[in-house]
Amino acid sequence: MRFVDMLRMSAGNLWKRKIRTILTILGVVIGTASIVVMISIGLGLDKATMEQMESYGSMTAIDVYSYGNYYSSSSSSTDPTEGYLSDSTVELFEGIDHVTYASPILEISAIAQSGKYRGWLNIQGMSLEALEAEGMEPEQGRLPSADDTELTLFYGNNVISNFYIAKNYTYYWEDPSQFEDLDFMNGNIFITFDTDAFYSSQWDSSVAKPKKYIVPAVGFERAESEEYQRWNYAAFCDIEQLITKLKQVFKNKAIPGQPTTRAGKPYKDFYYNHVVVNVDSTDHVTEVQEQIQNLGYQANSNMEWVEYAQKQYEMVQAVLGGIGAVSLFVAAIGIANTMMMSIYERTKEIGVMKVLGCNMHNIQGMFLLEAAFIGFIGGIFGVGISYGASAVLNKLAMNSESGFMGMRGEMSYIPPWLILLGIGFAVVVGTIAGFFPSLRAMRLSPLAAIRNE
Image (cartoon, rainbow, N blue to C red; front, side, top):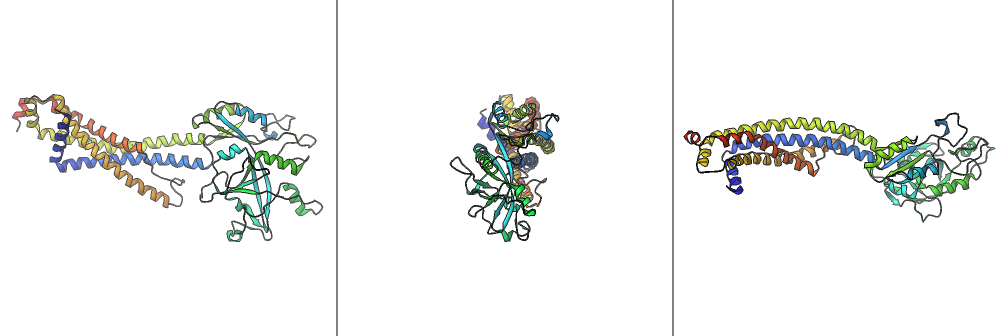
């Protein structure tokens, strides 16, 4: 018997018993929808976590910190630079396998003023390569580049929240409408780098007011997202330009945040508390992070939190998938029952087929095809219902003020492979459920089957 003939006969036999077939398919639909939706919730949690982590920074970046001599492992050390990260440390990190670049971050605090507005400014200098990799998206302008001949700043979209009206100390968060004319891109922003002298001069008239510098802005971050990102509240610049500017401002005086000699003199080289190490792939982040930690430095990355979360969500997926699988198991029992009933009703038909010389495996294959048909049709409709249920769950999560489990994003996520897995699993379950009834059909005695009324 040709496969096409078996296919036609199987479909015809199912169609003859419409109500029974529909009810059996309905069980498969519920089972498939349950397992797909349950797994999609686990995938949605995983995807939302990944997106949330990516918003905090690159997934291939490792943050290496040092807290200076105070936290040095050798408290009796007489070297003030011990515990800091230096240019030689950066070169050491760059020599590690799979590291694409290592960029020191020079972070300083400054006072910014523009007309009646004043604010605290966190300035972070890093390499141009690291700035590009951070993923900041300008709403206006661009990122600092090698073409800039002087220090330029790129502002995060929430820097304005650190500003206040100097006359009455009204902060931005108290009344944002009063700050509409504060323009970082086109207005003159005066920067005071010597904050100690600035505050001292406010209370002591004998202290000379420090010089203010106009530092042009080249870009402003896109402000459409309400999610926290590591660059929202800072201004960024090229680290080389920042070092040049600080040397010009402080000349031979100690620069805030930099170690000094026992005599209070600044060192020729700069030292850092933070270095960003970028790895060529997320697959190697953990490996490189462990190597840096073995060198005695504190190293953190988003990947370690992602890996921890993924392990938790794998357990969630297993539990939710198991719950859905119970429904599909119940549907499998229904398919087996339908096939057994079909065999009892078609005993004489089976006997005639055997007497006419039909191959035993063809008879078995016909019943297996019927069971697979039920699984296939139920799987397709089940996946369709899953999409509807997923859309409803996502809408409920989006409309919730706190999101889902504290995260904003899709509560349920159905990738293409899950569709194929759902339909394929339904077909496999249906085929397995029809296997033992098909064996009974294959083993029926031809004479006994023909005599059956």
